[in-house]
Image (cartoon, rainbow, N blue to C red):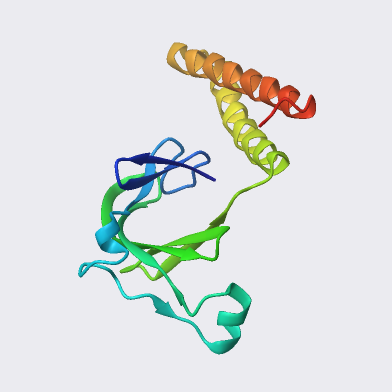
Length: 168
């Protein structure tokens, strides 16, 4: 799960839930959305779709924009930025392709229920690790455990808001 924000004409995707390579809170990719990359001489040509795919998506080609994607070895070791592309797929989806790696991930707007489920699972793993370290008596780990508990309580507050239909 990512959080998409914008800095001027740059889309910035920050991980809300991390993985074994790039942890939560880190930027996973950026894309340059300047108009010149859509219609100007700098524009990447659209990805041409087959006739069947064109009917499915309602377009003959998929717009794409240059970007940078972060890659790292397990444990967020040797992180680096590599060439990438943001590809618009219909009106509700997009994907990001890490070009040299040959990997791509598709994104869509998740439901409120899915967001809560994913955040809850992530927090449960973090709290379980912190709880085990807490038993060992490490002061820094104890602080981390308390912070994770606070984050989990914020998730419960968000869940209450959604269940009470106050979520927009």
